[in-house]
Amino acid sequence: MKDFMVQLFADYRTPIVFLHVLSAVVWVGGMIAIRFAVHQSCAMIADPKMRMERAVHTLRRLFTIVLPFVIVLIVTAVIMAVGLGFRAAALDEMGNVIDANAMNLYKIVHLKEAIWLVMAINLGAMMFRRNQAQKALANNDLGRAKSMLEVISKYMVPLNIVLGVIAIFIGVFLRNAY
Image (tube, rainbow, N blue to C red):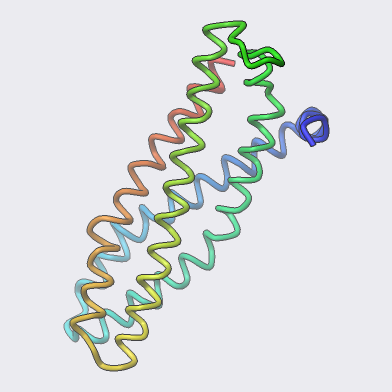
């Protein structure tokens, strides 16, 4: 499998990197647009139930759009990590460090992968909370719907924005360090 990914990256380097960057831009950019543009517009709707229904609908649309990009991001990340040979440059077959600088870069690759993994888990939790809010709205339980949505807008989306920006910066750093 390793040899396949190395060859795949060697043959399709530009499209793989492009898809990876595009996926990050769509995911993080979508969250920024939702949090700082759409959220503010929804807040202007006077009727609380209508405001929450609009938020639930908007989040459903966002998640439908970004989910395929999240999958592409993860797949391209693995292909790039293997294809660029970070591990091979840092460790020998026995797992001994052969180059300290390469090992530091390899650790940074893992840090970036961990950030995207946390973001993906957070996305799954947001999707769950959105679904719970939709069910609560269907049952006219506005208090529960509000509590489900509030956590998404106040904490979960901002967390993913910050983590996403950090991961993008790390990606640029790695690209320039390699």
